[in-house]
Image 1 (cartoon, one colour):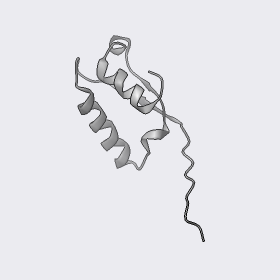
Image 2 (image 1 turned 135 degrees about the vertical axis):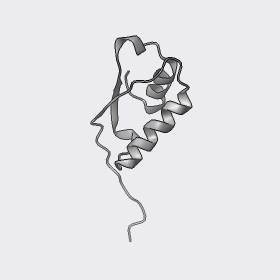
Image 3 (image 1 turned 120 degrees about the vertical axis):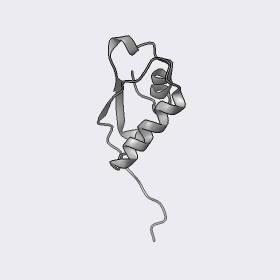
Image 4 (image 1 turned 60 degrees about the vertical axis):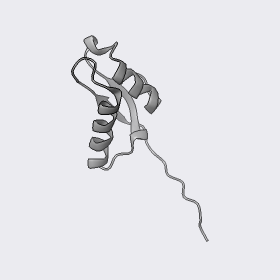
Length: 72
């Protein structure tokens, strides 16, 4: 009788994000999660988040990286 499941998730997704300046965190998160679900990816598979240099101080993306526990 197996009543527990072990799910191994390979962290191999590099997520590239572009957005308008000051896009709210919730809007970015909703879009990213919907996109990952569409292709049947778990958000925990995201290894890092990248964007153009101009976005390095974008609060919504920074907060998303913190929430996903991955570098930006």
